Amino acid sequence: MATIKIKQIKSRIGASVDQKRTLEALGLKKLNQTVEKEDTPALRGMIRKVHHLVTVE
Image 1: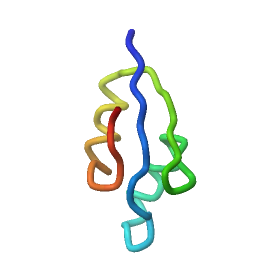
Image 2: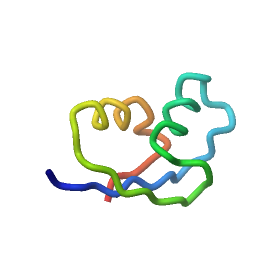
Image 3: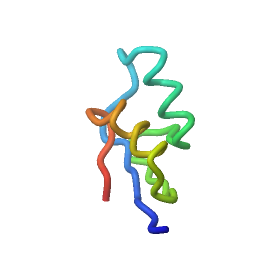
Image 4: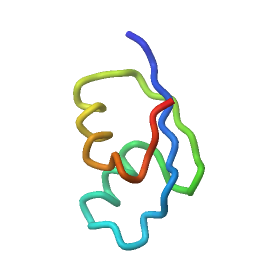
């Protein structure tokens, strides 16, 4: 499958606990950090949950 790059563009301060845990599960710990993951339906759901905090490259 293809891979996608996910970059955190906004701070997790003020986000709900579920959103903070989703960012951790994606491997994002710092602002402007980029991770590369394999594109799966589960990953797409996680991105959708925090779409306002991340961008997909």
